[in-house]
Length: 140
Image 1 (cartoon, rainbow, N blue to C red):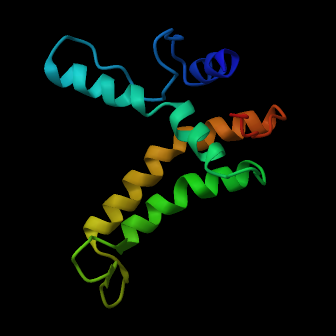
Image 2 (cartoon, helix red, strand yellow):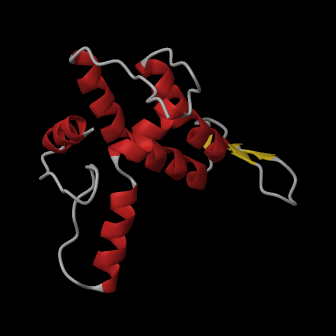
């Protein structure tokens, strides 16, 4: 794991942090409560917890990086398009417009934000794919 963490940190142009796995998000400088909270949140959104969890989520098999990326991204995108809030009726995203059909602004913003959030993780997966790495679930 240490070697993969080192590669992830280098890929994202960051220093290896012995306390946290690498994440692609910029470190917020300073000691303000906001900076501390942002950095703590970013440290929980690292390659191991995002990519690694999705490898483990595959069960006792994995069909490769494509399936890991599919698992990683599609559930979150689905949550942008289908509201399944407990106690409420199920709601699908709405299309608006007559000549230029598009999704409602809030939904488009959620999709944009979600795709941009996962982009550095997909870039890292593509980097590892190019190096010939394959995802393997660690034995417990």
